[in-house]
Image 1 (cartoon, one colour):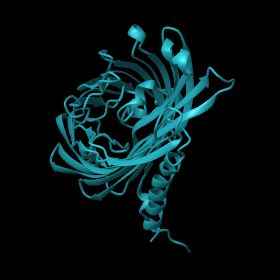
Image 2 (cartoon, rainbow, N blue to C red; image 1 turned 30 degrees about the horizontal axis):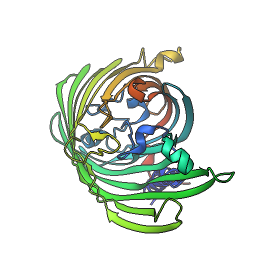
Image 3 (tube, rainbow, N blue to C red; image 1 turned 180 degrees about the vertical axis):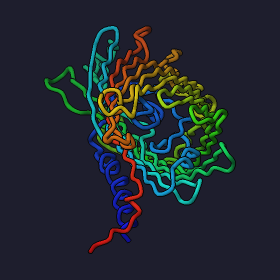
Length: 432
């Protein structure tokens, strides 16, 4: 009974914390005009310590640290142990065009996960992480002289918020020495709200008033799957080289679309309600990676590909076209001496990495690239170095200011708590 109570408390905590953060619909977890279309800004997967290494992780295999990125890694969880991870992230966005600048800050719960063994060489993992975030505020003033002369000044305000959360539940099993396979169910849940407000300052009277308010709400509730493999190409007592592969299934999201649209002329206040199903498709995702580790160092490389092109219709009016994406991530970590009892700094784990990816949308014929460098440090909570506080920072640049485009400079700060429970989780307490 004690074991069940402890596990249930952690599971409830794992589900309640991100659900509470996600329920704050007034908060914006991204601030980018590039989130006007599609699903928004796709989140970098992984825990704080993996994102500090550029976001690598599909081949990362560790007995005391959770890896959300490959379900095959759950087979590494040792008997009579319990892993728990909790992470938060703050983001600072700095936007620049040819004529203006803007900035925005966010901070929220990011991910929660647990993992524990079911049987020997068979592990289970549960996690809640973000898939995408939408957040933007923009204004546009009509400069057409005919409209200015006949109607007056017309201004449009565009805004949006929301995002999708992914709930994962998977198992990993070692089917042969050095070879593990895994599978997980991914439940996508969330909503994206977009608004268009039109304001007119007429030429015949003073003041301004709202002439049009239109909104679109997209609600997603869909289940897909993810499959993974990890194979130890090299495994000795001192070093290990692991190959990791994951393939995430795609398909139509079948989102529920609700639109409130003004009807009549531009001065009408009649509003119609239109409901439909979206045919937007989330493409499959193939990721391949390598991770080499010894007692002191770990170095990894990941490559990901998603076939967005041809899956979704282009928006010719706004110049939006979906394109295939490629992502390259490299990173590593270094621990001087995890057993040093005299010098605390030598027990710290230092991390760094680099990430380059292409955005899944082409805007006005322009491809968009995203580059980021990452650093981090793992701070052991006890001498065994099994539980850690992981702090990371990331600086990135997306887009450019050519041809009226927007360049984004962003800074992200993450903190994660990685806990390892040993035998005492599973021992029934005795009293005299």
